[in-house]
Image (cartoon, rainbow, N blue to C red; front, side, top):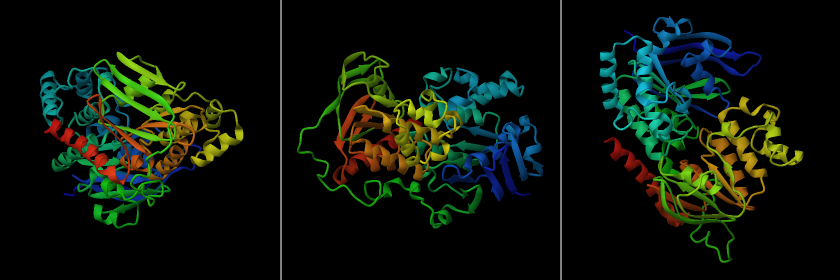
Length: 486
């Protein structure tokens, strides 16, 4: 009996009124394989993933060609309830796939839809609790969970019916290093149980050592590598498999910051000062200053209070105690672009920040959005929306600019464009970047502020001499997740 779970034969798809899509792709995915689907933004990963999870052609309109087989069945001809019993999906933002506000209700939701008895549902809840470490997460309000906790619940929901195939869309985008490594251990455990896992992602260090196959997308076509080692020898940039092997600082990756290079001999202009700030039980006695001419990276595990600090500095919430003083109102770029895009086109969005058409077009071109200038912001991809937000920050006239996870979901080329722009902002402003992206931090940060359990654990200028402190912080985040899930 064949162990093939999914087979594509000359698979292609063309969106309605568009030539964009994928074309003539053939590959096989076997039982228990961990498959990485990667490639640059716009290469066709999302389209292929929608084909694999059945959203194409069931939901997304267009013309599909070739075949996608599950055993001897064509996936396109299967009913939705049949697909759902066979496969589960975890989206980049799990909040978009929840139907209820209570975690336990969310877990039983698919079971209720398939008419399982109360006794069977209780038994399955117990199995999921043990399998995915859901102690402390049951019967909770979903909106109060951290990104990592929401993802854990979404994962359990995706396998609630005993599905044999699991698909992830950019699962590491909003996770700290420790949570991503924990996800890698979970995926390894699923693999050992014979569950097939397909992961679409730009960052894949958490899959190192467990990847069986790589599907590399380029201009709508798949190149299939039958092992992790074969992919590493392909010539494609595979540094993401080993973050700490990255050499050098700076956007070129070659020019290293020398010892003492960041030491300043002239007085610096302070544009943000936080003094003994606490907020509820999230952050406690936090103090630091932000200076014009530097990029500071605020790092720490999911849920330690990084975004809360950003909101406190912007005045959207008030501290329980302590003082915050900034030079004017900070410009805040949120983690979720949909919350702050209001224009009728990408160009119009930037014109609301600065009414200089020539400068707006220059910024759009530098961020790879020139051909999208007339597109409605909500028609852009997630990565394109994030780059549009970067453009807003470039054009704003503020002394303090705060970015919350500006590279989540970006491929390496887009990340480099964003890093170049943020490096340029230090010429006019102080920049605070909240980030889990190790490579990005190495490229832009002059300084690192490490937050742990709501307090500043470390604060230092980043150089060759202090790199071990950054690496140590990331390894501490991993160790914390290891201890919590042991």
